Length: 522
Image 1 (cartoon, rainbow, N blue to C red):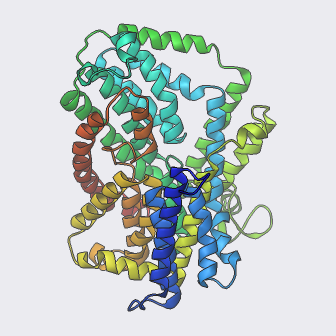
Image 2: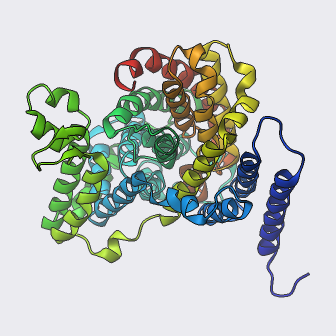
Image 3: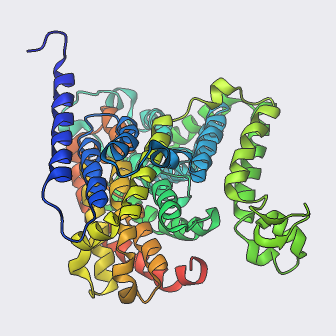
């Protein structure tokens, strides 16, 4: 035993050593047929990062920071500057802005007010009360991280349950299996699952969405705008959330209580306790509404192009060559969604609603993870490793029906996400899915870029639908960590939901691919 070194530290060092040895063995082992030397080194870097991401031996962000170092050390890049370029990707700043906006909503309890209002209005029966909690959680998760949303909604849900079931029953954490009521289990599982599903709705809703957006931009130069993602994400949320609610409350854990008026009254009391929204809070609400509105307007350029003059249109929505009101040619557009997001931050400060210390308190680890993922994806693309790995993993499906291809991707991603975080899963699998675009372009009847977008988005969506284990997503971990449900409760519902959602997502993604995406995404 090494003195002064904890058991956790020794285990962490052991996994790190394993990851490094595996990486070196691949890097300096026999050459892989069809893969360049630099491509083999990039693959060795991914093995190193993948082992650490999957095992959780190091924080995800710490592993991400090691990627540029290893890529440069192996000689994939001649110097470290291109290896670090991913950390300055413009889309990363969109998510920084989104996180900071969410901080402002939380500071003035705007998210909490929305949740309590929905519960007070809709919670007229046990199932409707659970649905209200799930709808509130899903809506907030579109704008605030699913982790923060679940952390906020779980104590609210427990407080409301106390009015339905009696405080002693709800808060008896070490109760025997039989004492956990169906109402309690369905409410808490519904909170976690709704946070995961709701995050799919918007581009900033959950890290896998960010991963696919940043890597599509980095690898293909393809941008999914805010409105384009809404056309994909909102239908999925609108269809899958009711299915999850129905299975939880009608099949797995039907509520055994009839009267929830006490819970509605408690929600009203909580809401009344919040008092009137302060002047600064109203300013935050206006800024958030304006930002979200401009994100949507910025994606409606085909509509505005019909009646705006060319200079005005080019100034607002961007142009590669046309003249603008500013007297220059070529412009990003004032309504470009990254610019809109970034402008919202100084606006919050100028409106005297937030200070820098409050804004800066965001999940920088996730931001760094995005950067590391982009750096690795860039290395894979520039060395040909993406295509090589994609052919090795999915080549056997070439020529298979599209619905089978999508089903295989969804099932694989959901399974992987049960073993590790959905962010890590997306970071590893999305570049591979982008790489197989060229393989399946003919099967899909699309261009290589369109096929890559379709498959990568499918994988990113699936990463939010792992429901069986606490480790799969932060929302699962939070409600399990509350001590008010058991893992067996989550596994019973989650295992079936995983199977059901594999089928539902496969059909839904195929439908969107056939009838929605061709009109809007390519």
